[in-house]
Image (cartoon, rainbow, N blue to C red; front, side, top):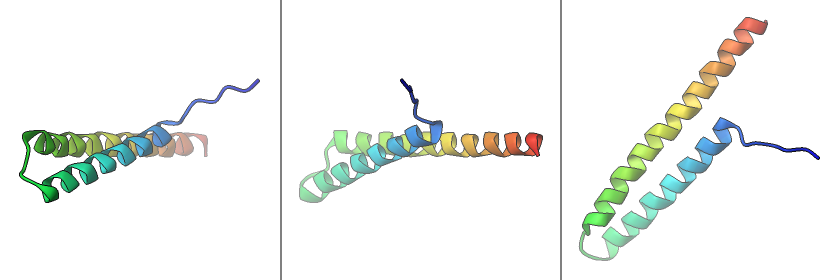
Length: 72
């Protein structure tokens, strides 16, 4: 029996997708009617999520590069 765990990059990519969906939903709500506070908050949370997930990907890449430098 093999147990697999998602890599940090896979998890971050999924986080980016969720943030994108959050932005799209908030944008749709704003386009359809008056601007609601929760839509503005949702956009702000999505922006923070994008930044955090991008940082995870960047850190994972730096870690892998360091590991490759050490092993080569």
